[in-house]
Length: 365
Ligand SMILES: *Cc1c(COP(=O)(O)O)cnc(C)c1O
Image 1 (cartoon, rainbow, N blue to C red):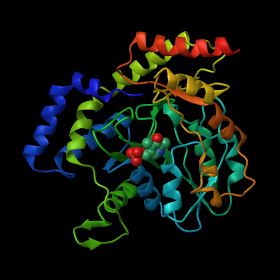
Image 2: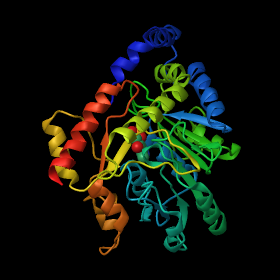
Image 3: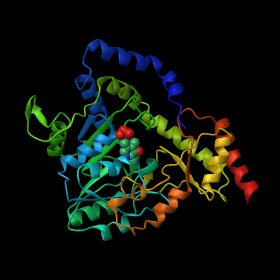
Image 4: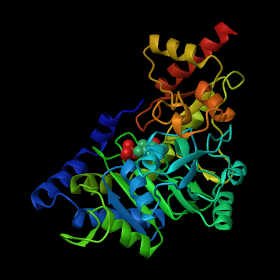
């Protein structure tokens, strides 16, 4: 699905010397290298504050903590996302309230949010799934009308634009993951929290170091979630290539679009308001599980994000009404399949993959 080793080989001298410099500096957690990356990321995203932390999951948890989300609160989000979006809500004692998705973008359907709001609703977490931005204007409008916070789960969308803004710079707080396979990937766990609010930024900077501004004086309940300097050094090098790599992914998506038989396979769409960064290239098909088996037998990598929506997961289903029905979410979970998408793809690989998929459908229809 990804090829991080060959990507590394292309930038090896730069990466190696950046890592070496951190080791020689003796400063491994926070410090100058982390600040440098935070400044570069803030500039890139067009946001006032970008604060490094230990993972995308922590970014979500710290964002919720900074907004005082707690026991009894409700947070509106999507059930068609990586578990971390909801796990962090539940960890803080709040309740996830799911809104169905748009069948074409797989993102939260803004027209269905208002109906899910109650007196307990405190925040909305739109997830820019697969690297395609959520339609943010209607989300912001609803949030303003009901006085709700907006946390953008931008874990899959570093570099994507909504209209002329980068995602993670639009809501009250943005959360980014630098998990190695994300579009901007570290060589270990890493994440980032973004905001335009000076007040929230100050609070977030305290929360990630045990709730303190002055060491051993604890003003807030906090966590230990700091960005490693080695990861920041790697990310500083890779950030320079991010736009180039995201454009490459867009080119590869166009190649898949042309090669795949679009009468039998629903290829991804891009909304007029979006710059898609194709974290995943995800198609929709009938008989998805049979296709997956077929590809597996041919040793063609592929993945299903996500086979079971969160409201149906054992760990979370008790938190939703038993009769909760999210038809578009449930249908997507049965039909999606993601194809290899990374910076090291070649036309030959894409042709091989697309031919195999086309053959599967031609022979079986
Ligand atoms: C990857 C991801 C996360 C979590 O990021 P980690 O860095 O792996 O903790 C959260 N939300 C979404 C949508 C993700 O894809």
